[in-house]
Amino acid sequence: MSVVDVANLPASDADRAAIRDRVLTNRDELLALSRRIHAYPEPAFAEHRASAWCVELLRAHGYAVTAPAHGLETAFVATVGTGPVTVAIACEYDALPGLGHACGHNLIAAAGVGAALALAPVAEQLGLTVRVIGTPAEERGAGKALLLEAGAFDGVDAAMMVHPCPFEVAEFRSFALGTLSVEFVGTAAHPSLNPHEGRSAADALTVAQVALGLLGRQLPADWRVHGITTAAGTAPNVVPERATAEYELRTTDAADLAELRTRVENCFRAGALAIGCEVRLTRPEPDYLDFRTDPTLIALWRANARELGRPEPTTRPPFACTDMGNVSHVIPTIHPVLDITGGTCGPHEAAFADAAVSPQADQALLDAAIAMAWTTADYATLRHNTPH
Image (tube, rainbow, N blue to C red; front, side, top):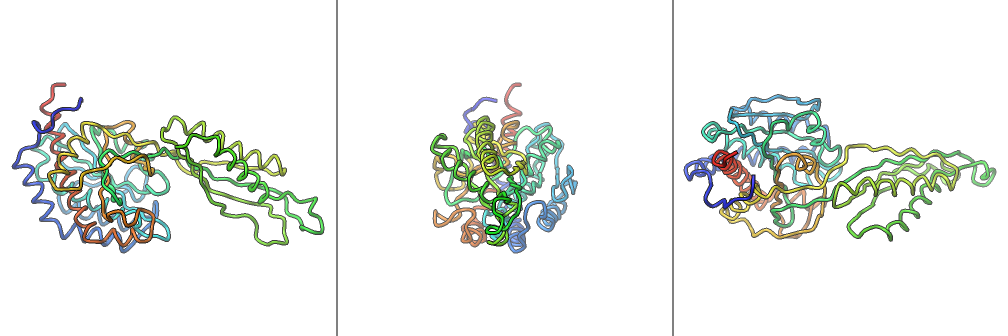
């Protein structure tokens, strides 16, 4: 579908009013859902309470729910309506270990549920099937990539979600992300009695990290390599026989990830070769692909966000990663971000967890629910009025 003059093809005023009223009527339930999820943060693949609370509210408002879904214990799929146009709304609800909801996924889940509740009474007359997909493990594990492969998004015409941020962006851009687990295995020895018999896994990792530092001088400016050492010995009087690290690789285009991965892995192989250790390189999760915004959907979103009085969106270079990028490679998708801090703090900071239950965050939640529901209704109207 090509980009059109969205002003001429909105959902009816009556449908839009009904949707907005429905979100505001459900306001207390939605804010309570956000706060419950925030108060009980659960990490990737362990979001049992958050998932159950979303399911409970969706069922109470007429959704048919399958939970667990597609082989993931904390995933769910909820549907209402039988129309020929299917729109998926993604709900994230995993938290960051040690930081709680410092990425504001409590707001993402509640906003997605809010949009879904508002669409339920009008889905049939709009010719819609609304599919709410509970997507665990966005922070670590690429839950949406797993769900996409398992068929959770099959038959979907458009998909959407929102994300809280310290600024407002409509056309979200993200890095592609690959992850790498590294394990060096050497030989233990006493560092003064028989050091010549040892093969230090920690030294192998050090050599690799020096190689990575030099490699960085030869990479494109928008490629990123960063990581942490997770083990490098247990005592200073033992040559370490095991060292481990976790690394992330980022490029602005998923097509470049393979080249970056090869070059980074060769640095770790060089460390092993130099010291005489073995190295084991594994991928702990699927790659996260770069996000691709659909122009028609985002034009509808922009008009709706403007009507709600949201701040005028800015344009930003890639600044994060999301497994919603994987969805965007196969389905028209949007992932706008809404300001909840005015730039005072950003995701993955402790202060952002506090901001995720602030009055500004509550307003963003309600605005996101209304704007997503309006955008869904507009998209269905557009599809039904566009010759195929």
